[in-house]
Amino acid sequence: MDDLEKCLRELDEYLPEGVDAYLRSGMRRRACERAFQLACENLLDICNMIISDEGLGMPRDSRDTVRKLASHLMISESLALRLEELIGFRNLLVHQYGRVDDSRAHKQLYSESGDFYEFLEEIERFITSKRDGSGEHRTN
Image (tube, rainbow, N blue to C red):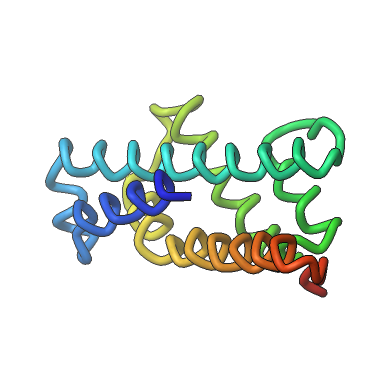
């Protein structure tokens, strides 16, 4: 979770508010994309650790990873849907790099990083409930 927070701080630091500044700086643009990619990978690692610890079976793909947490009420369904979109964007950055619309990338990076913070809050609640022995999971 600390690694995810570090990536988010870096993204906040490097990402210019305006799309024009983002488009003009190739190095800054790539740094933002890399921080986003690493944030997604950290998020998926957290999900996979929980899935393994809870014995929830093997996810079919990266999007199924967040679906499993939602289906077991560890995160909300609405958050899972937004995280699936983030993961889809990460896949686009990683696998189809030449087809990335940089204006769209800026919008995605700038406006939707809050989903990572919401994920951290919901996972922290889940972990706390496990530690406390209450076993109370989030309801959708």
